[in-house]
Length: 229
Ligand SMILES: [Zn+2]
Image (cartoon, rainbow, N blue to C red; front, side, top):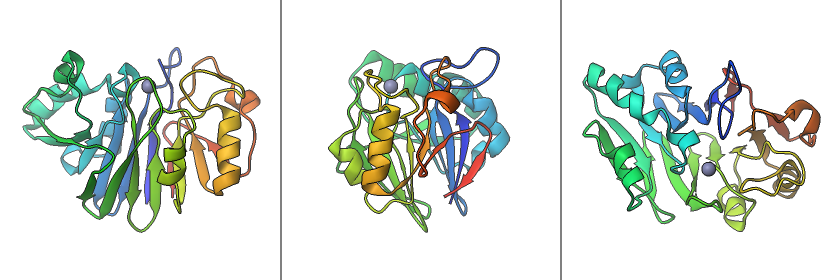
């Protein structure tokens, strides 16, 4: 199982470089894109043929996780293909703007959903964030979890049980009180679970090398890098 970081920033990219949340998870021929933040579409196209993408997962509907969904439609038009998009239903105009395209085959999930996509079993866990967010757990030869955006919560511990790796939106300074995990939450989570964490969702102004608490099980996501899970 492999994970490529397409975009690690939030809520907006770093000046002159970077993209907001977007990742590509692969195991064998199964390829699932995770979120589609601004600047990630170009990198996704460089990482894989869109025709080979099994599905796209959207963790929640904040702009920094959905921005490139709109130009993606033009690409799907040019390729004349449909794409499976897994996300939660929301009765809102924004949901209809994002997903109301015949190019998207939308599959709505909640915390009770279990899906099989290629060789992966997918389950979902409701996190704690101002916009409803589901962590996705993908089980194949390895088990991988992506949190989307969340505070540290009991459901994250459930999602991460026995996982090999958690891609975690926790790249914030210790003591951060916004709607995301902070670096000290990540350390607590790593110590209590023993799971390997890839920390992501960097504020552009955050000097993570300096201000993210260090832990042997936590590494800092790097854009363009592919990790073996
Ligand atoms: Zn968010």
